[in-house]
Structures are given as C-alpha cells and as structure tokens.
Amino acid sequence: MAQESIDKSLLQTFVPVNALSGDQLDWLLDQQEVCRYASGDALFSLGDQDNTTIYLLSGKVELTDEDGNQRAVSAGDTASWHPLEHVQPRRSTARALGEVSVVRFDSFRLDTILSWDQSAGYVILDINANSAYQNDREWMIRLLKSKLFHRVPPSNILEIFSRLKANRHKEGEVIIRQGEAADCCYILKEGVCEVSISMGEGEPTPVAMLEEGQWFGEEALLSGKPRNATVSMATDGVLMKLDRQDFDALLREPIIKTMPGNQVLSAAERGAWWLDVRTSDEFDQEHLVGATNMPLNVLRLKSRLLDPGKTYIAYCDTGRRSATAAFLLKNAGLDVIVLDGGLNTNAATLNEYLTQG
Image (cartoon, rainbow, N blue to C red; front, side, top):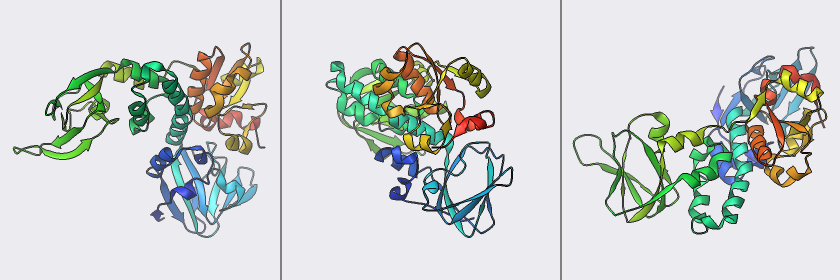
C-alpha cells in the first residue's frame, strides 16, 4: 500500500471539506493520508470503528453490508464526493475493484476544524461590532488564523481577548528564557521578537523572527515542559500576556447538556426536535428522520426561527460542531441537548432512524 498526496483543488470537491475556507484547507492538507490499494484489498471491514473519514480518489470500490447486499462506488460519481461509509461502526466492508486510491482524515480533527471555521465568522462579526476593539481588530483577526485556536472552543475566543493584559517592552528585553518553567504565554501586538536557541556553552543561535499577531510561549503551557527557546524583543513593542490559569480555563469546553443515543431517543419520544447542524450537502446524503437542517455557519442568524418552548437535540458526525451549536443556542435562550459523540458513536442505536435525501 503506497502513500502520496493530493492538492487543494481536488480536496475542495469533497463534502463537507468543500465548506472550509482557504486557510483551513491548507491546514487540512497537512493532515492528509493518501493510500493506494491493489485489487481485492479491504479498505475497511464491517464493524470497524477507526475514527477515520475516507474519500475515494480513483478507481472503484465495492461495499457489502451484513445482509450481503452490494453496491459499487466509482471515483467521480456523486457518491464519491461523500465519505465512504462514514457512520461507525462501519456498516459494510469495502474492497477495491481494481487499483484504488483514497485520502483519509481523522474524523474528530476534521469536525473540529469545521466547527472552528464555521463559527469563526461570528467571532469576527463580534470583533468588528465592538467599539472597544476598534484599534485591535487587525491583529485580533490575524491571530484567529493561528493553529492554536483549533484547540480552543470557538465559544471561548472573545473571552481570551478580554483576559489579555497589554505591556510595553523595550528592544533587547528578554521575555521568556530557555529552560525556565512556563507560567504564561504572549501575543505580539506591536513590534518584532527574536527567537533563539542555546545548544551548549556558546551564544544562543537566532532561529526565527515573530511578527504582529503571532503567539509564543504556549507550547510549554500545553506540554508542561520547560521553555524550549528564548524570546527577546528585536524592537520596542507591545505584548499581550495570558496567564497559565486563564490559558488552561479557556481550553476547556463550555458546560453543555450531552446524552448518549438511547437517552436522546427517549427525549425525542417526549417531544424534543432533532437539529442537524452539518452542511446541507451532508444532510442531503443522510440524516435522522424528522430532523431540521440548520448548518452551524448560519445558526445564529436563523436561530430566531426555532421555538423557545421546544427542546432541541443537536447532532453532527462527532459531536464537536453540535457542542458549539448548543452553546450559541443556549445563549439565545433555547434548551438544547447534544448527541454525545455524534452520529459516528451512536450509529448502532440510531441506524434505523437514518434516511437519505
């Protein structure tokens, strides 16, 4: 089984990857795993639960379910725009009919980046609408492109900005020193910083320059290890400081109500409404019977159409996007339950309630 890579234009043909912005597509390209299979090879088997989203790039695949029913998917078909049997545990075995290539992504990472990308627009709107951020909008919006923010629940982003503490620093001032314990991280608001590394007894070696809108110092907070580099001011400038306590708090998910599949079915029987927050293309491919589709990227705009007297069960593939949706709807005064683990985790329980089209 050989490995290769694909370009962005091909990636943009897949659902729901095609909903991502250019910056996030670039990030996703770094996460790809492209594999080639020989005729007869199994791509996955019935019952597999591998947390992997797989798209067919070339060739033809035969899918066989537990009853022996078979169907074929060829690259270029409408069906190939969607993940192969993405609900888990897998409901069929997939075998290559001739030479086949596929691209694989970690399902949770994909849903995380979708959640972030589709809710980032709300954050930018809030930044632009808040007069308190008038002089800070440019570096704030640039900062949102940082990969660190993929770790931060979207609902916590504005809270980060409110907790940052601004301090002026002079050229040559050492901000963090290699080998020291970490108690904070920084965002460069104005000026330039130099990153250097000491390899032994000699002088530190400069390895990078940091510009406005970049983080530094967060790696040691995430790993719990000593600082791996020294950062000093290359010019006079302004740094925004975030203490460890605030950093740790803001990486945590907001408190929302979650339930496993068997419990949300009971809630649905009591009158709760299904709310599918995936893209319309994903919804059209397969969704729960009776569900309303309200994609995350338009949710806040359309939430006024929802009945505040009802309880809603939000779901997506992994639970990541629906958790963000629940937070937004909770702030709008709605009662929302999240399907814990999404469709992928609850396929066995919810399979008979799934429908296409």
